[in-house]
Amino acid sequence: MAYTDAHGDVIDHRLHPECYRIGRGEQGVLNVEPYKSELLPHWRFKTPDVAQASADALLEKFAAYRADDDFVGMDMARKFLQMGYTRARRYANHRSGRKYASRDRSSLREIEPDAEKAEAAAIFHAAWTQVREDAAYQAAKARHQRRYRRRTRAAT
Image 1 (cartoon, one colour):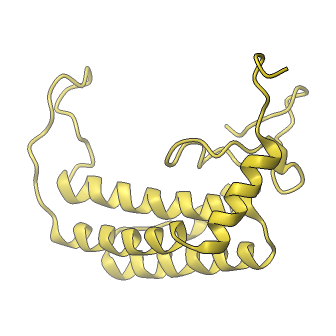
Image 2 (cartoon, one colour):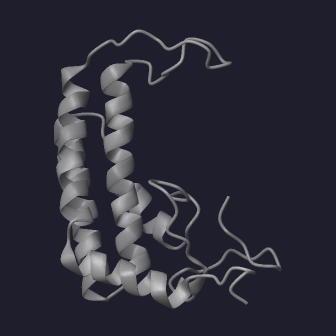
């Protein structure tokens, strides 16, 4: 499901960056078009080699968005790198990918270390850190927040 406008049409966030909300962490990563469709095919973490190729491709997309001064694209690339890290870490700790032993999430599964997935997670973590600390990304984020911050009822 993607974000839609009042008519039910999928919002093109490249044309309407004012509709984009940064959110926490990976929030909304699979909902923001056209970026989801551009980035998702590059997102893989099965082995360290696959993770490296994926991280490199996502960094290339980040650089292209940065060259176009496209903050939404840069932030979405960051989110995919972060998601690569968190998912690879999850599988590094739990071979099944399931963190909880029961559906009600009352108990955690035991940690079953997987060194290959931990290496994949480290690759994504390094790329995610590089993007997050990028000066152009930080400046674009600050501009986006200033330009599109929603006014609260108390401020109006």
